[in-house]
Image (cartoon, rainbow, N blue to C red; front, side, top):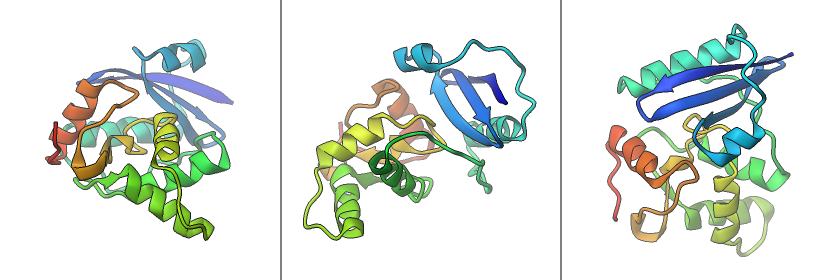
Length: 167
């Protein structure tokens, strides 16, 4: 059974979706992808993953580092999933560059090189914002780059975590 819910964050309304015991989507309601991909909000999230995600977000936005994982099952290609797995290893307050992630994927696959642009594409298709911390990925030399949820939100999330970046 799929359930959806809303979360009022300091950065805007978030839409959450859970199914079969795991969070499958967390997106800002104002994004085109959220509007196109989200089912009509038809329930008031009583599934444990929705409650856990909302509690995690409460802690995160209050400046605390959540000390638990929300069960998640993002849907994507094998490559996207591999990138998202790496994103989940980036600790609170730290970053990686697209190039570093590309090198990590290349090493995992036993190949010499992986495209940082391909990694950027997978990062941009992350269906679970914030919990899969795509906002912690920066360009070369820690330069601020695009964010599918809006650059202003990326800046706010990096600032919340006290992460330095270059404009």
